[in-house]
Length: 67
Image (cartoon, rainbow, N blue to C red; front, top):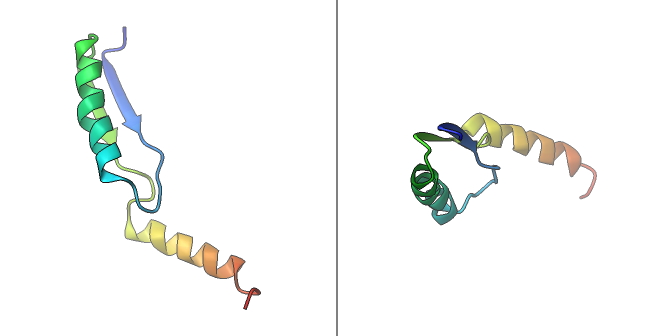
């Protein structure tokens, strides 16, 4: 079976903290209970200031002709 697992959760602009905790804690418990050894949860890809800035640039460009 799989002994080492890295989990990348889908990113949202505002992730639900409870869901992330369920994956990090509950998922790790289930994984280890079934023979896994190392589970790592990687940060969401949009969990940074540069990512939010990029999204703002895209949104500003896309809605520029709306108003």
